[in-house]
Image (tube, rainbow, N blue to C red; front, side, top):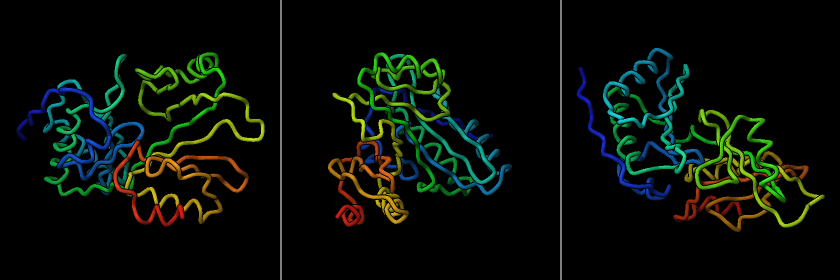
Length: 240
């Protein structure tokens, strides 16, 4: 029987870039909904064995990951969702390292390019009057620390964010999709969207996020979860 791995007690929240800069997190990418990793297992049976190995070899101390088992592979997500906090803690660094170690022992490779997260953003003049409708309709709850965010308490469906605006914009859409991608793959996703007929609206906040639009002007944002590190050369070329 595999030995249980001791996991440190979390000592506090950490920012996405702190997570990425820590050693041993190469398999993982922080998206809008936490730190995610995708492991290509090749079959449902192999994936099930991998999930069982994670359960047997890692001690979570009440902080279990969200695991999505599919025939092609396994997606693991690390996020803390409480009444007072929504995000990453230092414990997630230890969990990520230990889960990656389980994968290595099983000969399973991670594919960081296979993860992403989607958020629906609604422009609202008075979010306090709009948010209750969507909370009731979706069965969501407010994200801790942000009354403008609604999240799925089951951590399955896309989050909703209500973006304040000062005045109506009748000639511009008031709902758009945010696509969170790995920070090192943003330029490839942007290039693909532009090649498919889109246009760049703004790169003012790059490399944290870019604003794009489809051929009819409907907007979408490509985000890297607040990444402030060096801007990838290819992304700079796309924006230029």
